[in-house]
Length: 231
Image 1 (cartoon, rainbow, N blue to C red):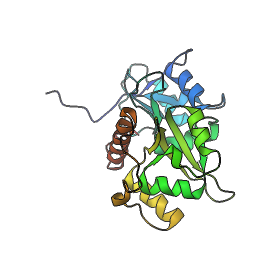
Image 2: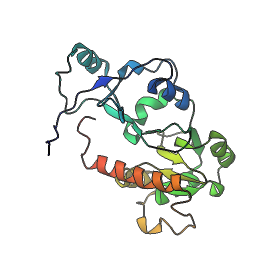
Image 3: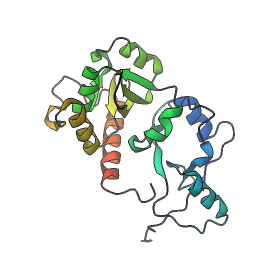
Image 4: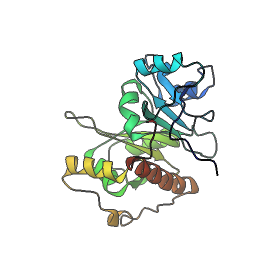
C-alpha cells in the first residue's frame, strides 16, 4: 500500500456565499471581525479546519504551487462530524475554542457550577436534568448540533467545554485528560469513568447522540496522544 506522507499541504478555504466559512459564521455567530482568511484545510474535502497566524498565512499564500509541506502549522478549530438532516456538521475542537470564542455570539450555553460539574464528571447529561435557570429552554431552542458549554460565574478564568446537543441529551467532545485537569481545577477531584452511567442517562439516547458521544471521545483522545501532525 502507498505510504502516507508525514507532511501535509495546507490550502485556503473558499469564502463565497454558501461556503463552509460562510455557514460556520452563521451557525456560530462569528462576527465580521473574525479573520476568516486565516482558516486553512489539509484536503479538498475540508474535513479538518485549521486557524493559522498571520505570518503563517502569508507564507502559505506565497506557496502558489503547493510545494510547502508542513508538519505543524496552526491549531485545529473545526472538524467535520457527519450528521443527519440540516444540522451544521462541523464541530468545535476544544483546543481551537480560544481563537473563536471572542468572536462567537451563538451556540453558547451558560451553565451554573452544579450542571457544569456534572458534565465534567459524566461527559453526558440529559437536557431535562439541567438545573441552571433557563438552560434547558435555551438548549432546546438552539436546536441540534455542536455548542459550547460555558461556566457562568462572575469572576475567574473563563471555563468552557465543547460538546453536542442531541435529541435529548448533551455530550462532550473533550479528551479525558482535559476533563481531569479542568475538573481538578474547578471542583477539586478528577473525573470518574465508573460514574458515567450511574445517573440514569442513556449513552445512546438517539442514534445521533450515540454517534456523537463515541466520535467525539475517540477523536479528542487520539488528538491528545499526538495524532495531529499539522495542528
